[in-house]
Image 1 (cartoon, rainbow, N blue to C red):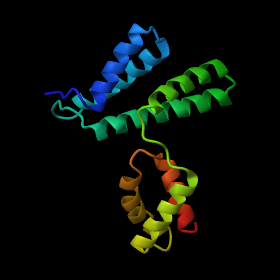
Image 2: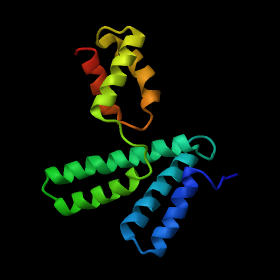
Image 3: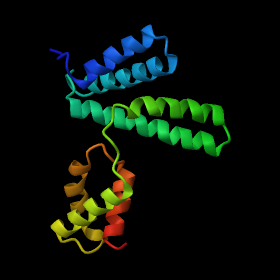
Amino acid sequence: MSDSTGLKATLQQDLTAAMRAQDKVRAGTLRMALTAVTTEEVAGKQQRELSDDEVLKVITKEAKKRREAAEAYSGAGRTELAAQEEAELAVLEAYLPAQLSDDELASMAREAVAETGATDLRGMGQVMKVLTPRVAGRAEGGRVAAAVKQALGA
């Protein structure tokens, strides 16, 4: 049932290596990511194996949680907790595709706006529908939405 070449298998192998190396942060982070993947696999009516794209979405969601927690801790002056979250984020980011720069994202948003012919915020949903699959894990939804709004002149 499970293929040993997918992203989940890579996470499991890296977890084993991190445990052998006694890298507590890396091992703990990978363990949490694998738990989130497993939780996603058993969610719904029947258990299933996630595709690499679905595993990537789970990792992206986990990375977003770490980023937001780090910002919250920094804002509250809890630097040691923020540093822990940032260390976990760095581990997760190694499994994510390279993030788009603001310029690349703005350019892609302008192309999507031109393709859909949207002229104001009412067309934002159409533009997001075109742009989101192209971005696929290389930028967070909030950044994508902001780029689309800017491309629409709002």
